[in-house]
Image 1 (cartoon, one colour):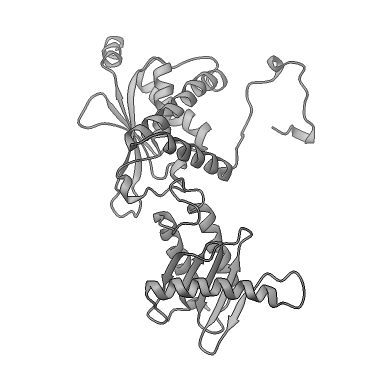
Image 2 (image 1 turned 90 degrees about the vertical axis):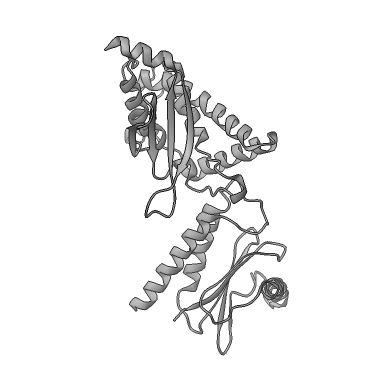
Length: 141
Length: 195
């Protein structure tokens, strides 16, 4: 039983730079994931404009009947979001962990070009470890 | 370094300052970003991977030449190793400890050739955050560390060819990095006379 369905990372202009799905539910093809990423980018921007009060940073959590979407935006505008089971806990923490892995294994890699799709072996390795750990914590509860 | 008791001692001249600095560390992130820039800059200056490797090695050579001078003075009371095994263990222990905060994982003698020695490291500090793209083949940023080792050996009077390689490990996801040291003939001839 997977708590997380998929993980997306989008750059500051709305382009999908990383996509990974976990488990069979909610799997989508490349075109759909690209479309969904840029759609989310726009929705996120609109939500900031819609806010009646100032200082809104956009949607952080979208709850639906059969999934939750947690989003974390870094200061540079890179957005990380996971689609998961409804009511899945401590996703904010997981997103922070993923952000940390991104800053370590992607941004400190001299062979990574900014704003381009992420293809870093070390990032993949550490990411799957983090997800694995998160699942174990979930099973332990 | 911040002085004990929160007071920073002022010295009138740099010569009065004690050489021993105690344990000093720089931020790993700061180093990783700087090193990443070094690799990226050199990448713009070359058109093949062998050339990039050579440039990184040259950058390391300058570091090696300087650390030999400094560590012989600071750690060894102005004495320099003159024997082959002595200088190798100096690199493996002293140099590694001061530069990377730990002793290198292993120091071995090559099985096929008499003049070859290997320093292996499970995870080399400079490679901690670096993933080599598939199209770059066997390129290893450890070339910088190989350069440091060559700088130390060369300036201590042990000319050698030093290269860095990835060696796949059984049961491990990541390959380890081996620094291969091949000494010049004259070094071995001199060493044989000394015995």
